[in-house]
Length: 280
Image 1 (tube, rainbow, N blue to C red):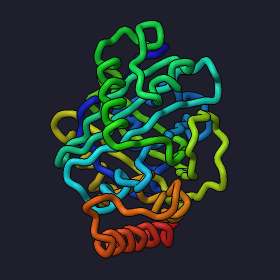
Image 2: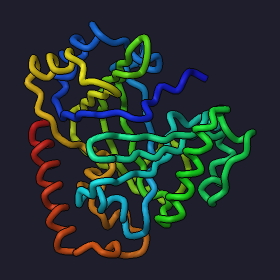
Image 3: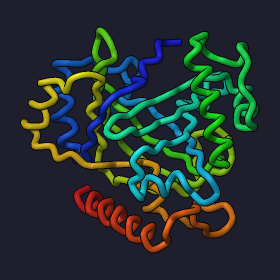
Image 4: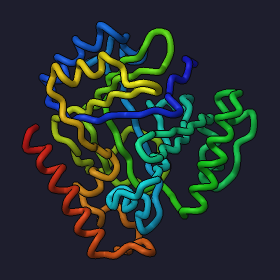
């Protein structure tokens, strides 16, 4: 298995851009970074990513994003292909102020059902001997149980990733064809039931770095006139398709959430997504 290049703590800036601009940015970026090995020789230099997001019956994690909770997180299970021998990765993506922190642990597919049932994997279930991966899965299980979270939504996209040759301190990704569909089981197949295209034909550009903001990032933003924004594949996708598709047992509100505030914030997010789609 190739080295896991996921950044554990980073800052990331997001931009929603048209395809023609993405192609121009690709030519700019290739002077500083190299294409991720998984994209070499593939259409659009991209590999596929499937994320199965977990949430409570009330979609409490989703509403935390909609309402801009300061220190929020998402629980997701990532896989890259239908191959039953390919590993599955449990991930926690946490926002702490402006920083993004990730924990991630991979298991063999036979162990996934046990983890979702609240069991910690054994040594033979893991894809790596790195103790941090076991810690990540243990923490995932703790949060899953605390939130009463279970599979809720399947998010798919095609990722073009550019990485630094020497380390993983700088990374540029461009995500295309972002789709979301309800999914209440852990099938881990590419099939999706009536997905919606979240950002139309727009591309989600992310500039990611672990230390100082690179000078050439500043130049990239200036040359292409980029305007920073937000783009949550999970939250924007649910808002666009409609929460009713993702509630398991009728409409509910998380404890402590004022329905009026929730609806106002949801409408504001939908208006922003609609404005993005108008430019597609």
